[in-house]
Image (cartoon, rainbow, N blue to C red):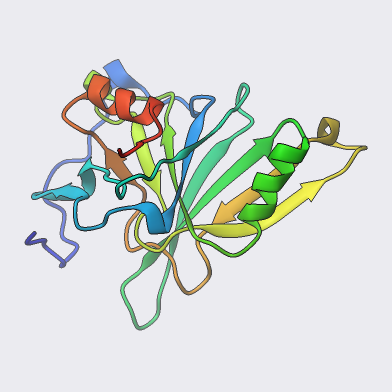
Length: 197
């Protein structure tokens, strides 16, 4: 894909008052082991480096749902200015594991073992025609666990954690938008946790 790397603007930056911004993400998200993504079969829009048109997992792999309530889970990103290299972006996902059961603690323990993860979220703000609903965090470099806490005296004994880009290994772009044909198609694969037979 030929991309203009000069950083020059190519279009107006507009406000669509029919799709005014709102905060938050939908309750459930999908965590994917970064190594389970088939990078050769994952496709990007030829004219926009921020648009993923197919997020493909390797054969026999699946993502894993993290069930949320209200706005317990959240995502964020920020520019990381580099002095002698292209600027990068730090992606962050803050999550809550509501039940500190043995099964859930086992998965939380797995998160703490040093692997890298990719997160797919559905925003409450979905844009015109719902084309901007889904975002992918950590697609290139992956996110690692940065904090995990539990206290019986705080947060109703829930496990609170954060996955983030590692300093010095940030993402080359802000989170990618995922649109596989249309909203309905993307929602179907998201709800199925991107499982690949």
